[in-house]
Length: 104
Image 1 (cartoon, rainbow, N blue to C red):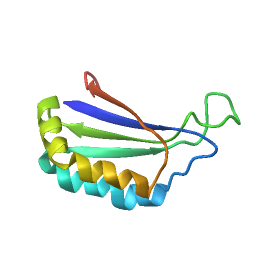
Image 2: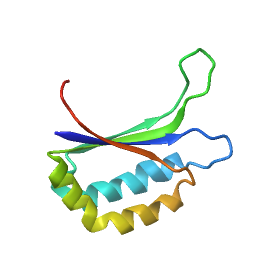
Image 3: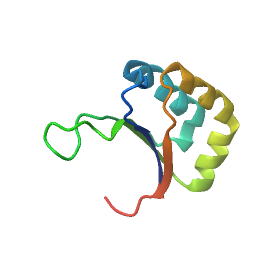
């Protein structure tokens, strides 16, 4: 199983619409990916390492898929639509990582 994680760095001047992300963007991804999206999780940053510090990331998501090939094939078909939707909730350039899930 693989996990694609998308992290949105916290930047005081940037926008991020958590409601849109939760109710529109991530359901769009799940619908378009179909069986290639086993499940997803959304994180909303609350704090950093030290008490009272700001979070490093305003948000993150994690999409689980059976394999890298399955994910890439499904995502590739809808990439343009998914990427175009990003402007509806943020102006932050995301950090993306695809990992193999090896424990848990």
